[in-house]
Length: 241
Ligand SMILES: NC(=O)c1ccc[n+]([C@@H]2O[C@H](COP(=O)([O-])OP(=O)(O)OC[C@H]3O[C@@H](n4cnc5c(N)ncnc54)[C@H](OP(=O)(O)O)[C@@H]3O)[C@@H](O)[C@H]2O)c1
Image 1 (tube, rainbow, N blue to C red):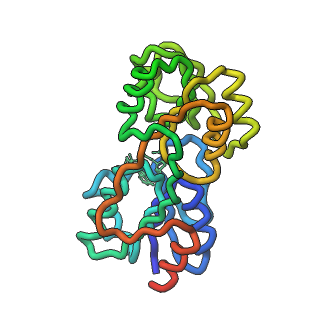
Image 2 (cartoon, rainbow, N blue to C red):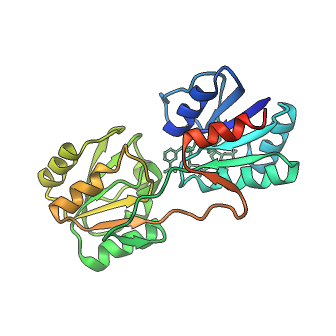
């Protein structure tokens, strides 16, 4: 049995490790990060070339099933995979880590709405953690930003007044609290990524009385089987062997 595992997340690496070498798993990465953490087993890197490219690749490689363990905000690749698997009649599973409970966060539907919320509330020192592709909406917002990302955003997408903090989690509560205090942050902007690696910022913000603006997840494609843990995903693959 041959499985395409769409990755770029810790869960995808854990799933590759859980199935290797029992199942032939080819992990796929987008190629955005210059030095990605690689999963065990075969890896392909780079886009497929849209829906048509993915369809051709799956047929040529004689793939039997697809597990989509991409980040919850990677909506384009997920839409492509759901469409192509439905067309080809391939079993398709989404492994999506549970979302965070928003608590008292201001929940918004997009980066643009998050930027509007920052302006409307007059926040002036914002910890922006929406990632490399999540800075453009804040470009013209009149505030100072502490921008944390794994790889540098395109300079054209950055607000004028900012500091850039390049780092890769996991983060801990004490460190996050110290960061909020050191930079006198008055709002945290985050996606609802879920997961333990970046969750301490939420607890730190709550403790420091810093309001949180949380971008809600894009919807999953309708009718797709979804699990939330690596064990469940491994079980789904094993019963298809
Ligand atoms: N979005 C986030 O916040 C975030 C955070 C952490 C990690 N990641 C990881 O970073 C990668 C890119 O995320 P994104 O939000 O830019 O994706 P996206 O917007 O959903 O996808 C854009 C395009 O990138 C290519 N692509 C994305 N994921 C791929 C994969 N695993 N393997 C091969 N091609 C892939 C596809 O190109 P083609 O159309 O040419 O096939 C896709 O159409 C994903 O693997 C995701 O798991 C994303």
